[in-house]
Length: 224
Ligand SMILES: *Cc1c(COP(=O)(O)O)cnc(C)c1O
Image (spheres, rainbow, N blue to C red):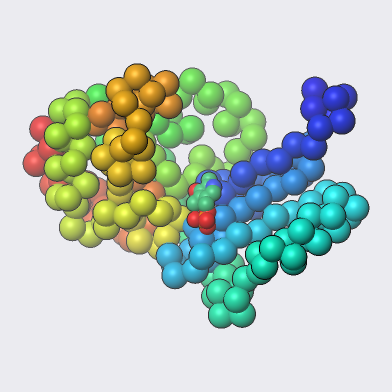
């Protein structure tokens, strides 16, 4: 539809990484990544990457980026390139552990709902199976039955995982959007964004899956 109207399509591919999805192969004109996340992989870089299908569009935007000073410092670039050497190993492990833990979380009594694209009850499961054949990514969102109080308790009770708003780190990170990234939204706006008072986001790292389950389980027991 956008191509017919002559409008370029940009896709933020941060959550999938180029390992799981390549938007240019599916008709996108521009792909952007927060390299802060999976690409660098160790939560020690702030950076971004834009990939263009069309050299002319790239040249025009690069001109603005140079004028505005949007350039990566050499150490951040080096850390990103070094992190990318292990991207495939990290993402493979994170996807496998996320799929395993999503299923276990869905069966826990303190949990009202779990969202991850490989789960059978995900509304976009069929699309995900077609577009993401190598894995549904390492991020899970969980609605805790105990609401806002349970969400806050859970993110403070984890011990192996860390309370952090980032994602795509080798360490598992948890956060409670209603009290942090989305605290400025009221109940109606939160609901419209698909975020409940007890929703927590978990970005699965590369720790052993049984260690992670032990940690999530002990935190869930406190968050009932
Ligand atoms: C974190 C994030 C960004 C912003 O990237 P920074 O590197 O933190 O500036 C953009 N898009 C998505 C999907 C993200 O997760």
